[in-house]
Length: 85
Image 1 (cartoon, rainbow, N blue to C red):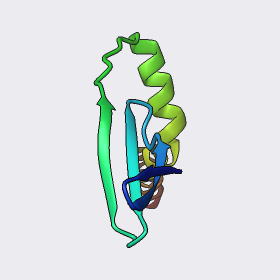
Image 2 (image 1 turned 180 degrees about the vertical axis):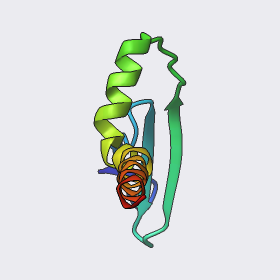
Image 3 (image 1 turned 180 degrees about the horizontal axis):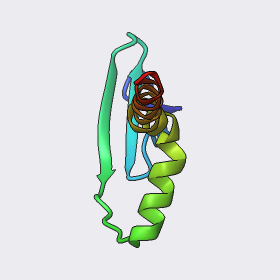
């Protein structure tokens, strides 16, 4: 707790994202002031195999329902129709 003149204020430091540091100052009237004191973009490079592996492991359910399932239904219907003829 910091005393500034006759007003008591509390200072909170928190980090909502890895690249941000925010200072929150709350006085006795519950007025809040947030200041971003550090912000930086960090650019990285990753290889294609890592990107593909990460994508497939994260979105495999969508891939199956969007591509594989309709493809299987199409093949099944085509075989069924060829047996009828």
